[in-house]
Length: 52
Image (cartoon, rainbow, N blue to C red; front, top):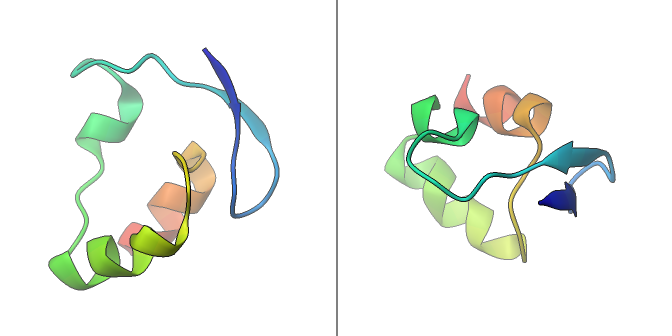
């Protein structure tokens, strides 16, 4: 499924499964709570930048 990142506006592919690239990104609880501001999935670059 094609989506648009609510953080940067970039279009990306989302597969909605445990095999998706996003399932491999580790986020702290603090970061997860901040992500509630976003209405949808983030692109790989944005998600990885938040995980650092």
